[in-house]
Length: 130
Length: 128
Image 1 (cartoon, each protein chain N blue to C red):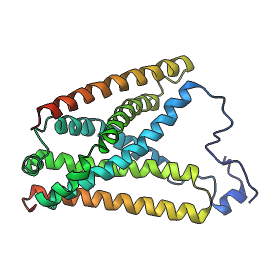
Image 2 (image 1 turned 45 degrees about the vertical axis):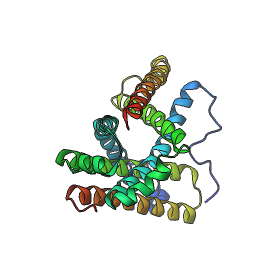
Image 3 (image 1 turned 180 degrees about the vertical axis):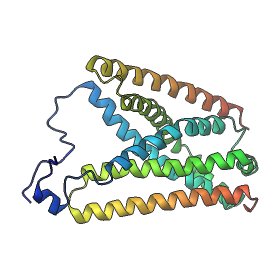
Image 4 (image 1 turned 90 degrees about the horizontal axis):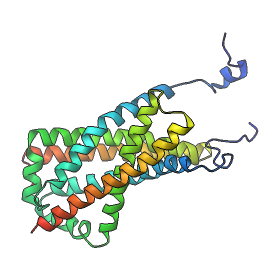
């Protein structure tokens, strides 16, 4: 077959900020897939006993992992809010240009607020822990 | 009237195949993950500590174990469907794409099975 242009045709669109919300949704999705790997690794460590969990916790609770968890919390909040926006779109609502531009800002604002809330709760939980 | 060309029919290209199923399951798992993931984050945040005894006691609760299993399964399924689309978008060439897609499926199956196994092992009191 002759070579034909293949999706997703990244170079044919003029850049608009609503594009960023779409790209971010995919990036955060991939980050959360890595997060799922971490979660299952931790669950397996717990199932393998106190010794195995302590060994896993040595690097899971290391200082290098703090930014990873912060990024995962951000990715979770963004993907949750942006995903709900997608579900609303699936009902056929909010697809007009002005509506999509407004909801793009709403998604960013809500996900930042949610990130700060979870971050604050995690910080409180960290301060409470022995 | 069909808009498909005879050549397209012979080559098997251009049909919807199972695209609708993929789209629909992606949405179903998304809807299920909204309450499941919020529950998970809230319960992790309310754990007093992450030492073994505390985590085992938490995971041994019947509802906790059940919801954790549903979370891992739904998450793995949703993730597999999503990563599949990314691979289809960016990995070109039939061989490379097929190998990547099969690997993605295998890794997600392994993750789902490991997650369910780990939760059941702890919930049934078999964690040492």
